[in-house]
Length: 355
Image 1 (tube, one colour):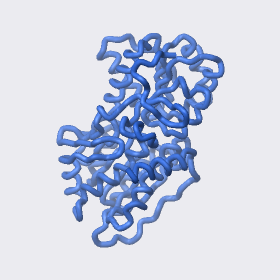
Image 2 (cartoon, one colour; image 1 turned 135 degrees about the vertical axis):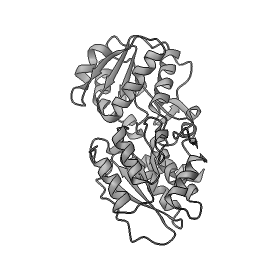
Image 3 (cartoon, one colour; image 1 turned 180 degrees about the vertical axis):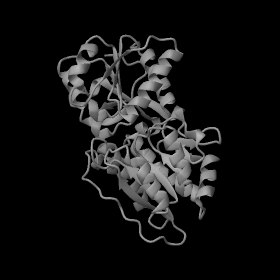
């Protein structure tokens, strides 16, 4: 609980995006150390999520100074094309033992081949498809499919399924969420919602016509895309229930101001009970703990991969369980829909009247 309290305090202090952080140099390898390269967006539009993850991981390192895990933080600056370049550099130039990826991933054949070529454990802290087709990749977040099922369960339970507006900023994260939601509508035999593509600059204008008649809006991609639009709609009295991404930072939710009552998002049930920080930040903290548990006093990358694949790990955000046929470890039962009330995330009441 002490670690959880410290994580709460740290992430509250880091609610706003921090300054640009340069890549942390890795000293010459020492015997008995296990080097982890962490790929994050520490500057650019997605910096809120990246800096929250970095702060959480730095807290873990500060709490465990005598342990063998060392981390190098690399800023991708919101440039998706740098991901595979930095993954290769970590494996070849830095001789890393594992990589943590805390940015949206376009999970395609190119990425799978890049992970296979690196041949070291790769832990994904943000949603992706179940990476079980890769021997080396492990998902610490719920899959896109898991999140789509949970979202439609909540929308239907609250009687908000129609009319529904599905909004996308067409980023890698948004596309993954949008495709999964479309498939879930089809799986349930539901009429697909109206889809609107936006940018942060034109979101309010493009969303307003559909939002004026919708009972729910499914906002995919970075929450930062929708901050101004949500505030604009709320000030105009247009308040359908707005579902934002699992990849949401508490600082972003707080920045919604008058639009906070209309917004809900999926996050860890375990953290909400404690008034803790964002699920993504806590999952980044858990990533280092999982690696340390798998190293277990000394192991090479292949042994760590095997230990993760066959292991169960109790973390702050979830209890992660992996198997040969499932590399997505987050327990879906640990998820709940959250609301922002009095400066903290709480679990949304099951019988709360809709807006």
